[in-house]
Image (tube, rainbow, N blue to C red; front, side, top):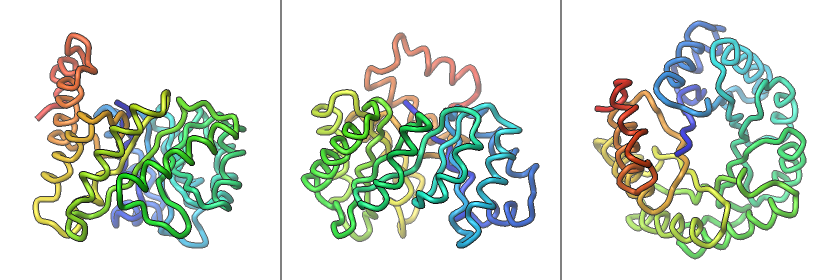
Amino acid sequence: MLIIGERINSSRKRIAEAMSGRDRKFIQSEAKAQAEAGAHYIDVNAGAFIGEEVEYLKWTIDAVQEACDLPLCIDSPDAGVIREVLPLVDIAPMVNSITLEPARLEGMLPLIVEFKAKVIGLCQSEDLMADSTEAKVEMASQLVEKVKLAGIPLDDLYIDPLVYPLGTDAKSAVATLDAIAYIMKEFSGVHTACGLTNISHGLPCRKLINRTFLVSAIIRGLDGAIMDPTDKQLYGAMRAAVTIAGEDEFCMEYIRAFRAGRLE
């Protein structure tokens, strides 16, 4: 199960303040905490700084790499931003993300090939919201073909079927879960990943919804998540679900997580 630590995101007020104030120690503490909690990649996002995203992202990348030896997930929809910052990355990164929008694909795919990056592909196009299982699967199929044509190994592609808030679409989770199961069965070598927080938008006890959705998705085959690994209840639910799904031989990862004090 690939864990992409989500905490260094400029949409969070405290992170944006740290970036603005060049609070290197705070950003580095966030990176270290996620690494120690079990993250495999550290997501870095400076999208809140419109017009200055490159400058803030470069500073953040430097700060995180100084403190942590995990690879980065560079989080920007702008191919120009990605082009500017990828040369600064020490370890082959992940790019978050491509969509089926032609300009975004044409700008991103050559960079992913050049820097041997993994990539998250969103089931999203210019004019269609993938709110049904069928639409998600169709877009996933198109993403697979685009990535293959670009010469990117399918093992480097993580498809995010996109889950929408349950408060506005009660069937969103079911559609996404069914899409995950289909993608993992039909597209050999491809991975799936998702962000969790959108599903619970506007609902009380959001973390409960997020945990339950993550467990359900793992049972359907999900093998990557953009999440907060420092949330012990969330991390514990993830680790238990992977074990129950039969993806943890002799339960060793679960036992290691328990011994490391990561479960709650």
